[in-house]
Structure formats: C-alpha cells, structure tokens
Image (cartoon, rainbow over all chains, first blue to last red; front, side, top):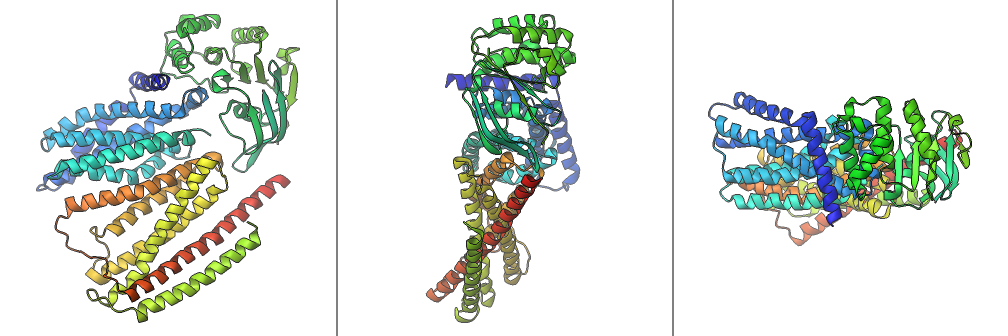
Amino acid sequence: MTGYLADVAALARKDLLVELRSRDTVPAMLLFVVGALVVFHFALPDDSSGLAAAGMLWIALLFTALLALVRSFVAEREGAVIDGLILAPCDRSAIWLGKTLSVVAFLIFAEAVALPAFALFYEPVSWELVAGVALADIGIASVGTLLGAMAAAARARELLLPLLFLPLAIPLVVGGVGATLAEDPARYLGFLALYDLIFAILSWASFEYVVTE
Amino acid sequence: MIHARGLGRRFGNKRVLAGLDLDVDRGDFLLVTGANGSGKTTLLRLIAGLIAPTAGQLEVDLDRSRLGFLGHDPLVYRELTPLENLDLYGRLYRIPERRERAGMLLERFGLWAARNESTSALSRGMLQRLALSRALLHEPDLLLLDEPFAALDAAGAELLLGELERAVPGRTIVLSSHQPERLAGRPTSRLALAAA
Amino acid sequence: MSTSLRNNGAVALALLAAVLLTLGLGLALLWAPEDADQGSSQRIFYIHVPVALTAYACFGWAAWKAFRLLWKGDERADLESYTAVHMGVIFGVLTLITGSIWAKISWGVWWTWSERQLVLFLILFLFYSAYFMLRYSTEPGPRRARTSAVYALFGAVLLPVSFLAIRLADQLLHPSPIFTRDGPQMSASMFFSFCVCLAGMLALAAALYTIELTGKRADANLRELRERLA
C-alpha cells in the first residue's frame, strides 16, 4: 500500500515538476478562463440574471479544464515517454492517480484566478459555488485523465478529447450550477460527490486497459 | 526464459511478424538481425510487454521489475534533469540507495557533469547514454536493446560494449542491430528476421 | 456458431419481428382503447416506448459484451459490443424522432427540455456518437478493442447518472413544468398491445444485430484470409 502511494506521489510530483519547468499549461489556462469571462460579458444581454452568469462560469471552467487535459497526455505521447512508466513495475492505476492529482492541482490554480475574476466582473462567489467547483474538479480530472489516455492513442486527439468529454461532463454542470443557484445546494453537492465516487472508481479500475497497447 | 510459438503481430492490416518460434534461456545473448521493417523493434517491444501479440503465444518468465529496455526513444522527461529522471525511475523500481546508484551510472556513462542540466540540452549521444543508464538502473536480469548503437556516439558505443562485456551472472541479453559486426563473437545465438 | 446457423437464426428473428410488429401495431392502432387524456395521439406511445426500451437493451448488451472483453479477454466480444452500440444508436435516433413527433402532436413543439426521456436520449446520442469517432480514429487492434469496451462501459454507467442529473436539472430550471405527462394509465388490453410491440422491437433489434454481426465477422475473416495469402 505504501509502495503504491509512494509511486503515486512520485508520479504526481513528476507531472507538477514538468509543468513548473515548461510553464505550458497553467498560464494558458489562466489567460483562457479570464478571456472567456470577458467574452461572456459581451455575449450576455444586459438584464441577464445571476443564472446566466453562473452558467457561463461553468462553461468557462469546463473548457479551461479541457485545455489542461489535452496537454496532460500530449507531453507523454511526444517521445513516447509513457512507455517508460508502463515498463516500470508500478501499478498502471498509479499513473492515473498521479496524473489526476496533478490535473486537480492545475484546475485549482486556474480557479484561484477565475473565481475572484468572476466575483469582480459579475457577482459574489458563495461557499456553495466553491464547494461545487472543488467537487467538480475531482470528477473532471478523473474522467478527463482516463479519456485523455484513450484519445492519446488516436489520430486527431485534440479534437477527440472534447467530444468524448462533453457528454460525461453534463452531470457535472448540472451539479455545479445547481449547487450555486438552488435553495437546497446540499442535494446537488451530494450528487457531485456521487458522480465523483462512481466515475473515479471506474476510471481508476479501467485505466490499465486503456493505456497499454 | 522467453518462449514464443507462432508469434505474430499485426498493425491494422499490416503484418509485421508472423509464425515466429523462439526460445531464449537464462544467460543467453541473442542477436536479432534484419533489414528495416523486418520486425526487430516489434519483437523487442513484444518481449518487453509494451505491446501484445495478435497471433500465437509469448511467454516471458520474468517480473517487470527485472526487465530493462532501451528502444528508439530515450524515455526520459525533457523538462527534468538527468539526476531527476533517474531518481524518478529509481523510486518506481524501488531501488535501494537509488541516489548512489544513479550517481554511479551517471559517472560511468560520462554524464556526471551534466547531471543537473535540463535533459533537453543534452546532445543525441548523451541522451542515448542517459537512456542506457535508465535501462541499467535497476540491474535487470533481462536486457532488451533495440539498435542501441544507432544513436550512440563513439564514447557511448565503447561504454556499451564494455557493459555488454561485463559478465553479469544470469543476465540475459536480446539485442537487435543491423550492423552486427561490432559484436563479433559475443552473442551466443542469432536470429535473422526477414521482412514480412 | 457457424455462418449458416447464424443466418438461419437471423432469418427466424426477422420473421418473428415482422409477425410481432405487424400484430402489435395492429393491436395498438385498432384494438387497444383510446387513452382518456390524450386521445389518438397517444398511440405513438406504442412505438416510442418500445423503441426507447430496445435502445436501452442494446446499450446494456454492449456494456455486457464490453465487460466480457475486458474481464475474460474474449476478443470476439469487440465486434459484438460494437454492433450492439450501433443498434443502440439506430434505435436511439428512432426514439428521438418518435418522441419529437409525439411532442409535436401533443404540444405543438418539435422539442421540449422538460421531456426527460428525450433529453436523456440526446445525451446518450452524443455520447455514443463519440464512440464511433473514437473507433474510427484509433488503429484496429487489441488497444482499440479495449478502449472501445471501456467507453461502452462508461456509457452504461452514464445512463442512470444522466437520468438523475436530468431530474435534478428539471427541478432547478423548470420548477413549475409547463408540459407534463404521466405514463398512460394502462388497461390490460393496452398493456398487452404494448408488450407485443415491445417484443417485436426487441426481435427486430436482435435480427438486425445478428445480420450486421454476421456481415462484420465475414468482413474480418475475409481480411484475415487476404492477409494470409499475401
């Protein structure tokens, strides 16, 4: 068990270190999410309610997440570096967990900018929204990492990943927007937690089949 | 240790290997020759477990942790330093005293001076030497080398020959090359693959 | 199963489907009593719901075959899973079309977000369309088989999760629904007609599935033979 967690830690650390050195993904995510929020101002009619703004935030977050997810496997595909991890005696699911944790970290960095920006441009951010975002991050990272591995083996992978991801992201949007706007956010937060549990376990268990040749 | 019966591998509609029978015992040094496209790389990747056969059977009686592989790609992270790369693999392979071992290999392959530089700054020859260090890091019982001399500089080639020369008890080697002359009498058996 | 036996099976299923569907539709249109609430427009229910249930069955079968591929390593299950998804998408599109027609007849709109079944099928349609994109852009081989299987399994799990999501979304976005429809209160004769239609649709799906699977298997065998000779 400790060996497994040590592997996960080593792999997550590797992903974070690679991102820190290359500075590819997180700056792009930050710029994109703020840019999207600005575009939405021009896309929304003047008398839009808080509903529209909250919805737009979730769209912005989803597409920002897609940026991170596409990048997370592109690096491994170049030079087939992931072969090195597959050859190693570690459990393949540890690769998934390490990557998922690093994607969650990237998402948190992006949201640390996006949420204040949203509060500045549109309306205050409630704790329910933050909780919803946090729970959704887990779901996005879990499913996205698995789908990223699937798409990595295909042609046109940058096109394929959003197609694979969006239907699976719909429940997350429902949960997230619900948590922000509903009178009983607990139900929607509970739903997000349920989604996270189901799909994280499923992704964890099936990663092995998807990443090996 | 390695047994193949009727081994075949297809990529889409293209058959790269077919009907291959192979037996490699512990301690053997197998040299695989053949022109480009004859399936040398595919065979080595099959043995390494990176790809699965699409026909026939392949048995490799060895745990993944005892296997070392050097292919066309160096399998190192460009954003990390050589030392960091070996440290990562050292952790994954659960090598005791991984820092010492990494340091020793970097020194042996002339990379000690560059140990804290970004791997993207290394020359092709140095990169291949780093890859070789990675492959040898955990003292594997089975060493798979796919055209290792192709990307090595003269110094690296000498080092590799020296490494192959070292009589490591129980170590099995499978090496593919389309210039087998360098190895002269070292291999104990040969396999010539023909293009499918 | 040999080809001739499978062909006979396909023919038998096709005949069964033809018989059941003709009977079922006849019963639905002529014999079953008219629904008190909705009148004759309700009769499309006899096609729409069986088609929807058949689509669910196809996706479920695809997930089962996908599971077998991953668990037992049964390579043949790849084509079976793929064909089942294909059938599911065909019946899914039919569900969307019949549902849309029903909405038009009932409420005068071609689409409504408050019809949960329709929204669910829209999501599933998106999901399984991406399945085909995944297959077409991955090179054939064990990896494509396994990746498709994992995706098909995700689909089966997404089904109930999406349904729950849609229910939650409904409560959030349409707290006072404009269009409501309870399932028709079915008398015995309605229920019987419905069951016959359902059986007919399932038989039709099974027939199409068998025919397509046979064709795909023959294609694969032919390709393999060509290669051996080359």
